[in-house]
Amino acid sequence: MAAVEELSEPDDLTADEREAVQHQLFRLADDEFVVAERYTEWQVKAPTLESDLAFSNIAQDELGHARLWYDLLQDWGAEESELIWERDPSEWRHSTLAELPFDEGDWADPVLRSYLYDVAEDIQLRALQDSSYPRIRDRVGKILGEEDYHREHAANWLERLCEEEESRARVQDALDRLFPHALTLFAPTDEAVEERIDELGIRSEPLVTMREEWLDEVIPFLESLGLSVDDAELPEQYDVHHSQLELPEHTGRDQSHTDAWFDLHDDFTHTYQELGRTSAERIMKDPDDE
Amino acid sequence: MDIEEVKQRAGPREFSPKDEMPEKYRKAATRMIQFHANSEIMGAYLEKPFIRQAPSLDRKLAFSAKVQDEIGHGQLLYRAAESLGIKTRDEMLDELAEGKGKFLNCFHYPMDSYVETPMIAFFVDGAAMRRQATLKSTSWEPYAHAMDKVCFEEGFHVKHGEAILYELMTGSKKEQEMTQEAFDEWWPRIIQFFGPTNEKSTHHGFASEVGLKQMSNDDLRTAFLNAYIPKAEKYGLEIPEEPRISKNDDGTYEVVEEDLDWDEFFTIAKNDYEPGVGQINGRKAAQDAVEWVRESLDSHENRLYGSSQPQAAD
View 1 (cartoon, each protein chain N blue to C red):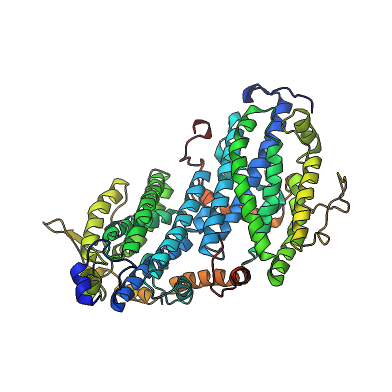
View 2: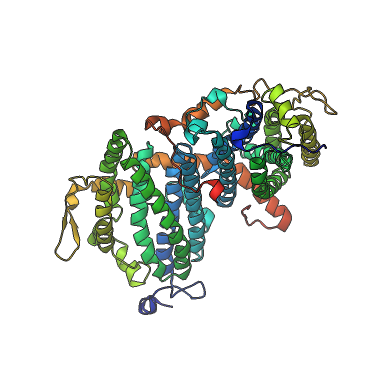
């Protein structure tokens, strides 16, 4: 790959550059925030005290990552209140995989969801390690370190659940439902802006390539557990060697969402609204000072 | 060892699983630790909705961590209780689900608004911390040992609660009013946290004779009021007129007992108080819904080890 030119400091970016960086950051920040928001639903509800503790750790890691990415979005003057608490739900850019609700007791879903999500996150973060935007590059390393544990945790659980026919059937159900939404992890926010992200070297791999890499990793693993991805509908655009792939109606990335997202948004902004807050209290150090 | 010897030797961290303890001691200690462990789990259940409804990212992280800590405390305490050989953890968790497991009065009341969270995280946790600090020198060593970690983490929880209280009481007029209303509602329950006066407590005598319990309810209540009345006032909260509380010359407090609703308290103690029943059943429903996972794990363990002993995944 040709060497790319280093981008300037936040304030010195051109409007086009800034838009590209912001799209990349919203992809990252919104995914982490919303997936963690869902994961925390399992606190006090996980199957054992041990799995409760482990999954809480993962949720908190993802929230911590969201904090790092939203912090970079604050470089242009927006506060946390505007980025999270007062932003219209129809402006969020997370993948719909992150926002889907869980059925009560459906532990197969969070386990599979975190596997699909964490493999994708790992691929996307590695494509940011040589980012032309230094502020992103500097934060990737810390996050990548934590992701190994997440993938291991999810893969171990999947292996166990897939040993038994009955629990494997539950994982299969979750797979049929989640797989199309997982593909939206690699959907574009906006075709032109995504191309610019690649041209500017903000990330080193285009979405299509990362999606193929992801499919090449997750499909053999899932099949080795006796699961079938044939029933899942796979999208056909960008197809290289996986045909019949279809994205769900809403991809999230393009700011279209499922109804569940709007309910979730109402719920997590409830106190902020009820108390008529206009700012979000920071209690931890600024990530730049950590 | 007979009961007389237990009473003679009773001292901080005096007994451990290496000692042959009489059944009466083991049962009393199990009752106390199981109550404590159940309270951690039900406290976590009560606060969980505010992970979602916290009004900032940092607060959300703090609530998630606090709820996680409480589950961790439950885990530690059930282990300490199991070491007495009376009940297994699964039996105790089943009892909690079936409404037979007892836990703190304050965790039977629902919390509807964020402004209520410091009532638990500052006042109730603050009260619990006083009791727990004395339990570092309880006579059952595994319990005392668990308290080292629990107390350390509770220190952070109380700071978290205090910071939220400060934030609310320096916030808008509406926030201040809502917080005062929540305080008016919770204050009598918080006083009742320490239970009735000693005469009415059936288990106190034996538990303190064998060194399980270190301080009487009255002494704990006095210590709490000494510390927390000034703290509440410092943050601008008004102490409700009832229950009437007067300070004696020796620094102790007198709470007018008839100002408190002891019928409600004893209904709660029997797990019969309606909102609390809803909380117990809500937790049970969530646990029943993941029974299939535990069964799947048991099969996994059986295949690996050929044993029928259920084991937990990590």
